[in-house]
Length: 146
Image (tube, rainbow, N blue to C red; front, side, top):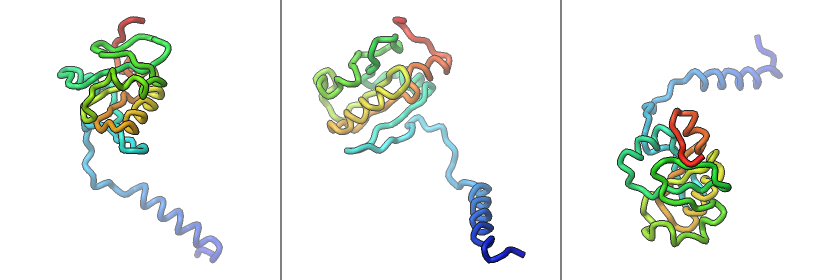
């Protein structure tokens, strides 16, 4: 028998156990669309190195390295635009605000800042390599220019 003082704790524990053991009804997919990140003005999408590698097969996007200082780049990079100069250098990006733009940096932090800046500037199809060049190399892909 549970005492009155222990009842709330027992209910909480029972609820947590039920939630942890519940099966999700959502299908598990490895969607190439990635994970959306909501920011002021819209959202950008985080992608994995494997997703980027697949996307690079038919490169239908503008591809920019935002890392400073320069520490190498992924093959097929279109531009080197420092993350802290993103809004000042919009003229180097596609004029079409709906164009697909993929960003990366060394760890993913600088490119996430740049992605957020682009979304705030009205770009609607912005993608970010989650984990950056570090994750890219850990996934077995190579960099050039190191």
